[in-house]
Image (cartoon, rainbow, N blue to C red; front, top):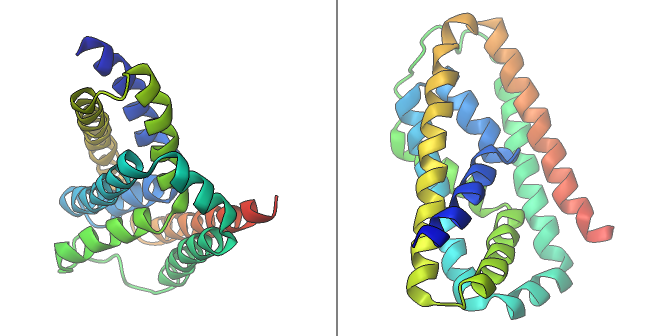
Length: 204
């Protein structure tokens, strides 16, 4: 199984530091809402990853072909990420929202938010499809090895994200008031840019 771990470690690192929507939102949530809510959001994103893994494991090549030929899948995915970005831009304009570091928002809403932000990004599904095809050939499509590989990737992803959440939260005292509003606005525009890129890929 050492071979599987050696494959999983770099992919877990890549997944954790991939500059996608979840990467930025997890950091912002840790800074403005606290570590526990950021972790809850991250777990929601992991659930979406697990669903994509199941789809990739049982779908693979035929599903890749189908999705690439359907322009509306990419457009819808891009639009969803743009909506999240617009939400953050408008959220950053509200005054007095950061007087309390941990407002009483239900944690399950962050779980749903993380799930949707990841699940609506079609690029994440393509990541798992491509990974399944590539690693599957190296592991001879052995079911037990593949399941262990997926579990190891998600473990490394969450382990690294714990450090991201912790260190981002350490900076919250320096990012109060107007500064955190600027962070949210930047993240909003980054998400909008990602959404446009996801949608535009269909025409390139």
